[in-house]
Image (cartoon, rainbow, N blue to C red; front, top):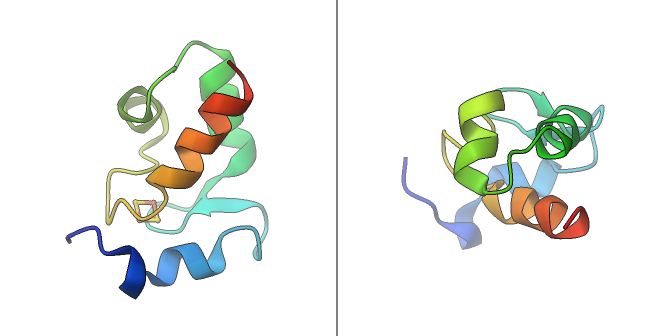
Length: 71
Ligand code: FES
């Protein structure tokens, strides 16, 4: 699936349902934050640990925001 923010259903759901950040894999904000605290300092690394961002990629912007928050 190609990243297309203007047509993204995933972003529309971010933060609305049970802390889910990545709808493709049901990964929560909490899980992504844990990965970042454990050393995943890029979107790719977070994806390797949690799978978040490795599907449609819509949530990658949100993952990057979290990474920036913990820098
Ligand atoms: S919401 Fe599709 S990869 Fe995260």
